[in-house]
Image 1 (cartoon, rainbow, N blue to C red):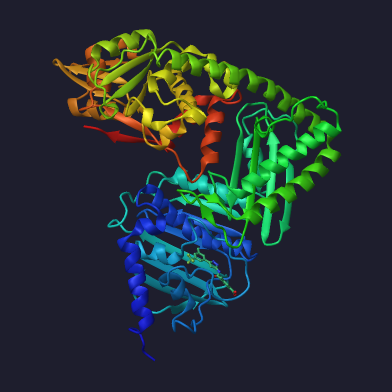
Image 2 (cartoon, helix red, strand yellow; image 1 turned 135 degrees about the horizontal axis):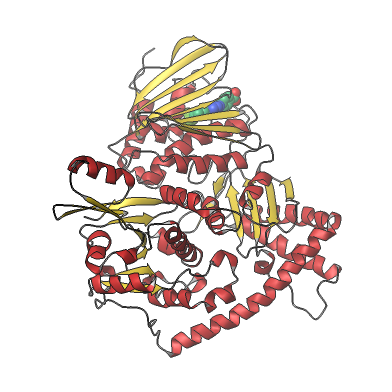
Length: 637
Ligand code: TSJ
């Protein structure tokens, strides 16, 4: 029977052609984020097999040619002929849009939201893709090129295992970038492993010279996730509060624990996908938490009748929590389609958390007391902060936003042309003021180490002079008052010494920006300046080296035996204005690192900052990792 050019096949080709024409409609973006989404999409299919109870382990490899291989030990995609389409179910999965999991029977298909668009989308956007199925002692294989079938699924041998293996090479015609980042994949795979208790996920980087592996396997699931979030914090009690239950079609799982810090670290997920904007499930959690703790505080007489209720914010100060639900048909709302809309999710989470948290508090009154005491302190501090803030707001309104005295502002009034250098130390600030291009470059020198915002409450943070100087210079306001349209500079460039202290100061500044103005980072306005480490001179010619490797190659170039000098820069202050301009500030020749963040894994980034700034860790090594992960070299020249 040969119906290769039947109506179905023509429709399929048109479908995949549409994906190639408008990839953004299917994966959101063709940037590196979209590239990583291809991996998540394939992995999600294997995770569904794990959720159905048939798969224990998933193995992901970045191959030397930058293709990706995903292997699971599930049942294998069904190989039989699909009656409706007249081809194998495997071929249906890879060629029909939205086909994933809709064949066969039973099973609890939960992929949704941004992912779950189907393996066919990955296929359409890959130069080639190869699938191998091992099932009932036999091995089957099929290959595709840019979504087009090479030949029908073929039996190629025997096997004693079962599972599915998919290898694909993202299409260079489609993606702006085709080099995968190990750290990004690692972060998301760790997250999936936390959210899917018992599932083992291994990641291999097989690219030459950067071979490495990571393995994730959490029998405790989201309980271990909360421990991980609090790993560099001082926790207020050893227990992880855990609630689990199903209401109607909604499966609810919540884990939480307070630390002695001031940040709220609550992350919600729907079908394993992060919902940074929350939604009904998160609202249900917050409602249950606030009501249960207030009822408890009144019953236990921690709150007197004339005292105000504790607010949700007070109760969530220092709280690390994971809210994970599984729902058959998630509805996403809002501009970015990241906010859950299903009202049954709110009632389900509210019911499960209210019931089980009440029970937990009855069983653990000592924990209840600690949490209420923390919230009462938070309530008092919040009142003080509100007053401090109103004061600064009124002040800035009265003074018409007077700029900080130390700021050497630029003269150009169009923010698009302007940049501000936040400079460590008064002496480097002085050189920078001399060196700068006055029309477009502003300089704000900061004295010494700025306040660590991870270790202070809002009232103290807003009382800090260096921080207030940054807030007024940027012009945007902070937190709820933040307004990006008021940004006074297109680029905010943090310029510190190229040593451990400088890295620490840069991290303090980035932490402040991240906590109070995260949109600046999301929108790509924040950069790190890259001062040189060495100056090499020979016969009045000068070279600058920004790394040890670069120094080595310069030395090789000029010959080590000849007459030269090498100067190691210890700080910005050792450069005169001209050198600072030439090496670090001149837009024509400098290199900047843009600070970026992985929006698919906000929890990881939050935790990176509190690990960096916490007491328990030596920050330098992690800071270098942070740079490697979130900062990209961009040459402006
Ligand atoms: F979709 C895919 F190709 F991207 C993909 C699917 C990739 C990988 C790595 C794994 C999988 C996959 C699919 N693993 N396991 C499955 N399972 C099924 O497709 C399956 C097997 C049996 C039955 C059944 O009802 O008997 C149903 C399903 C959905």
